[in-house]
Length: 199
Image 1 (cartoon, one colour):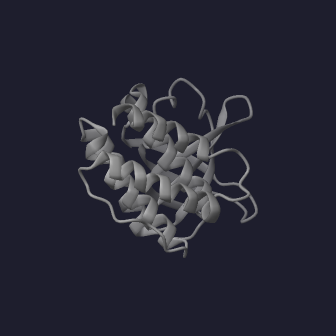
Image 2: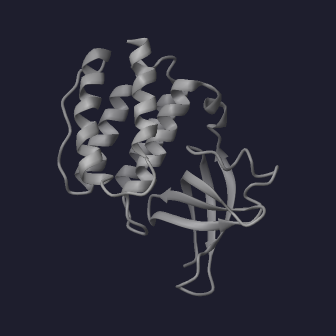
Image 3: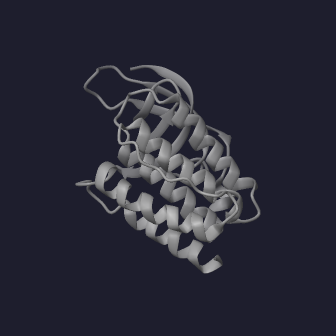
């Protein structure tokens, strides 16, 4: 697989002494993974942040081999990771996407929706400006995976939004994350706890 595309970095994990395996979401190729040489090094530290939009170039010599990935930063959201509530929202949305989607299947609407959610989190002065977008993204993800779901919610009522998040939590845990290794839902619980503090 050889490709060049704009992507959203969803997750990375250490591989070897200085490398990392990055999982990214692209509009045309869906969820893809690749080995990033030096991905844990000083030069790549600001690039390898969940939620960042990157230009990715993947190259491989064999279909059974993990591709090599070269990432260049297009739009940084790293500064948001110093703010507890935006950081929790980004970690959750990216972690959910990485865990729920199958690899190499195109979901262009999900890509655009996730990028829009990341942008809303970046520009909104408070969670009230993006929680409805998070609810819409979770609902869209459930529908794209064939599970329907979702709840209507008023855009400016944080109490109703928290109630909607509670309903969606059960659907996400049952349909999309059941049996997954690692506790992806822990990131969501942290986000909801932080949202409840501002309610």
